[in-house]
Length: 262
Image 1: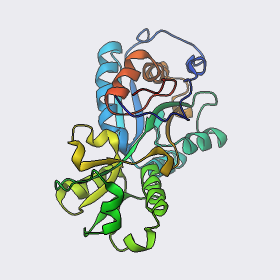
Image 2 (image 1 turned 90 degrees about the horizontal axis):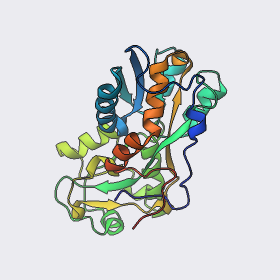
Image 3 (image 1 turned 180 degrees about the horizontal axis):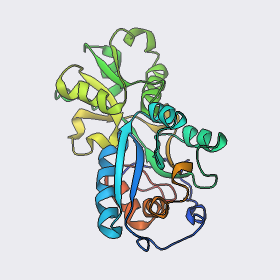
Image 4 (image 1 turned 135 degrees about the horizontal axis):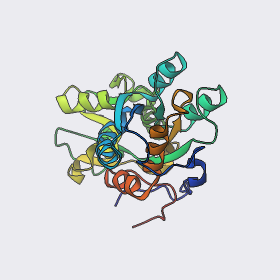
């Protein structure tokens, strides 16, 4: 069962997803929706897209990257119609500055951070592995642009290791690149989303306790470019519906509005 944030779970504001028209999914002519999606959510987005396209006949064209980079592209005129961020701050800022539709932002997933080794190094005791420092490189996503990178830095600082590990840290542009570093052997460890390593043996993964980093509440929002497109509204409803939520949970994310499980 995917991990949950016991002090963060809250209901998805379904009423806010009845987006000025409230059409039933699939009732409009087939259309194409352009989605900006945080790098950590890319593979999950691909699964969601297949389900949505089969159900509605619409097509989704997704571009992935760090949340900060995608935000900058949207502000600078990129023609995205939906934004699936890895935080809640950027969607809120887009609404505030008139780039997104007020009342459409909602939490579609709750992220979890893990420390991962692709080299078979035992990480059952992650804190000890970090303190001992018997590794050459530790990969993280750029904390300036990626919420999971920021969470990694917060975790390192919690253990008082910021200075000791500073020379070992390599920064990827986003979590996908940080994962690539460790998968290719360029880094020994990496802080990555739990969703990226959900099929990996437990000895190679240390789940970082939620209290060590700021909540990673991933929000989606309808952008002004797509405000009049019913297919874009349909996809938001799909994400917040049972089918979308089930798939998101299967990919290793927590769900807003769910009860804490074992």
